[in-house]
Length: 190
Length: 190
DNA sequence: AGATAAACGGGGTGGTACCCCGTTTAGTCA
DNA sequence: TGACTAAACGGGGTACCACCCCGTTTATCT
Image 1: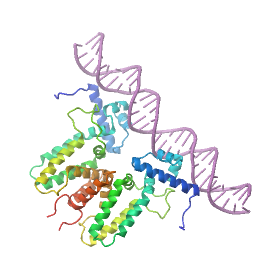
Image 2: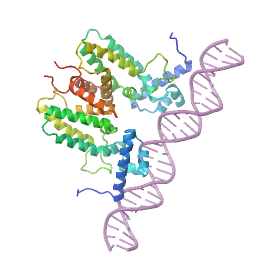
Image 3: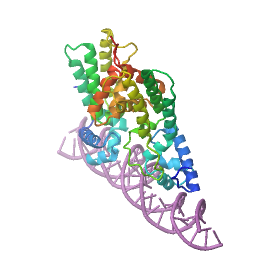
Image 4: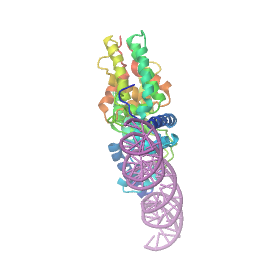
């Protein structure tokens, strides 16, 4: 059992209901889905939603935490691919995920307002940091293997993924095409 | 004098006031600035704003029409640069413009709802088409010169510019860096 | 000047985010 | 077990927003 965890049984149950309702409505209507409607669908008062998630950003982070965790584990699990392909694949997959899940992009963008809502325990970190850290591992590996252009940072790629994923909402096929384009450049090499 | 133009003198004056107020507030608060507040600053009722611009999208288009026109003329005026540099430069400049002018990106993205609001006369076309057409000229020229990777379309680049510009609002320096990155790819060539 | 249609805007509707504060309920301890 | 206490809840209020109806004002033309 973790050291710090205080949340009453009904609180935990209602938090889960809110997250489920939020995930569903966000899938349908995007990241700007009505918070009132989410609370309504969860069968709870809107005040309860605001108590659990003090901002839209906090709610989005919580909704996507699980998916982001899977993406990161997926990255770590890649066996013997070469560093360039490894990086490219993960960047492409993650961008497609952002495109498919309207809202994650916004979750990543927004001012990462001071963590402290009572929906977050101390040992959790925000999804942005989680993704950025994972990406940095891949970037470092590629750089070390000499297959990364000088000056390219993890932060650059993060912004790029976010940009493309957000701009191609609900069209992950296009997102993948654009990512590949951006990774290889628009001009032929020789 | 153009053939088609019917708008009463007060209508024309108020339309200009609305555009000026909109440009100012959008510069301050971004594309989601309150329409009520824009009308208020223009000294007009909100109904008047909605009559001139039936949607936020229509208003944004009108606000940025002039700037877009300049970008397009700038593209046509480039003298003897080689097609690759010509394309790259324009794409970079335009993306920086989108980043600097919060709202233009959204104007480009949104469902280009059927033109027909009384704020548009028949001979005007939407800014998206204007930019896309200009870009296509540069793309064709580059493709003809053999300096464009096969399969790259104007639409691809348009989406990419939009994505990067929107994701780096108010930070055109980063926008330029990311565009250059995307144009040349993240891996070294040989 | 008078007619007529264009343009205006006060004010209504229905929606949203966010929060106060009295009420309910889970957890605890004798 | 029952009583106590703090956690959690939610009805309802405030303030804002987009959007529109419809009676009033005003430009334009003859």
